[in-house]
Each structure stands twice: as C-alpha cells, then as structure tokens.
Image (cartoon, rainbow, N blue to C red):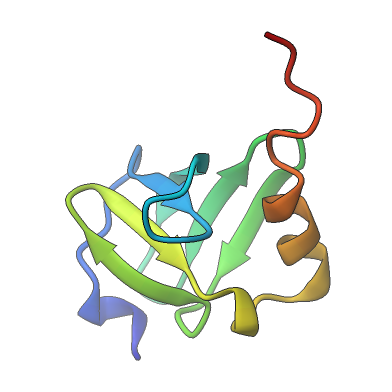
Length: 83
C-alpha cells in the first residue's frame, strides 16, 4: 500500500500488534517515508509496505515485512524496563 494512503502524524504511537503495547512513536512524516523511534533502539525509516494499519493515532507494523533489525528492536522495546 502506498505510504500516502495513510494519514500519519508526528507523535502517533507505534505498535507491533493490534492491542499490544506501544513500542515507539512517529518522529517524522515525509511524502515517501516515515521515521519512527523504537524504544531502546533509535530511529528507523519506513517506506510503506511495513505498515499494516493506521487508525486513531496509532501505526501498526506488519511483522512479516519488517527487516530483521527493526523486527528485533520492536520485539525488544520493553525488555529492559524496570518497574
């Protein structure tokens, strides 16, 4: 799906799965890509296919289409948190 088909804003929350825990946020929106911040891992660029859905200020990623480095970062986003 082309990136411009989504309505994404800076600050939208990023999720790996529907109903899951927030793993990051959108930091930049351009016509052909997004930059997202993943907690504990830094910034990553998305070009569109990696996005499964966008709604209500939330961006859900498609784990099957993520590069291994981004998938690993997304899965580990909350591993080092301390209560």
